[in-house]
Amino acid sequence: MPSTSFYQEPQAVSPFRPGVLVIATLTNPREKFWGAILFLSSEGLSLRGVDVASFDNLASQIKNGDPFTSGVVFFPMHRLERMELDLPEGNLLSLAQRFAEKTGQDPAPLLASEFLANSGHDAAGKAGGGK
Image (cartoon, rainbow, N blue to C red; front, side):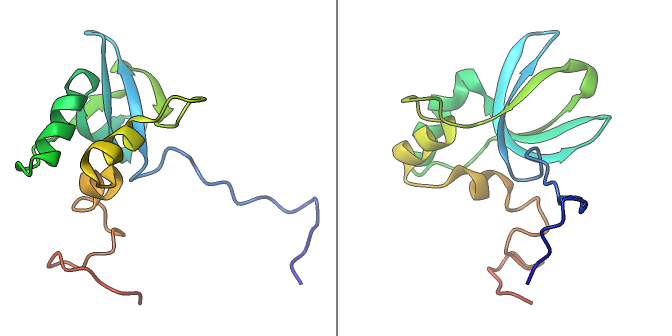
C-alpha cells in the first residue's frame, strides 16, 4: 500500500515541458506564437509552430493536404513576456481543439514528434512499441 505521509515530497511535473502546446507572448517586436515546446531553459524557448496570426492559414494548409511547413524557432528569454498553456477557456476552444476540428489531426504529435526523443518513433522514424 502506498504511503500517505505528509512528509513525502510530491513528484511535481512541470506543465511547461517538451511537447506541450503553448501560446508565447513576445516583446520587441510584440507578437504571439502558438506551438509545441521543444526545449525550455534559462536561455530561452525552442518552439515549433506559427505566429497566431497565421494559425488559420496553417490549419487550412494541413486540411488541404499541403506540406507541413511550420517553423522551428528559438526565442531568447529576454523576449519572452508570457507563456500560457493552450487550454480552453469557458466555452472558447483552445487553439489545439480548433486545429483538430478543422484538420481532423492532433497538433501536438504533428508539431513535436520528429524533434522529441520520446515521441514513440525509433531513429528511422518508424512507429515503435514499448521497451
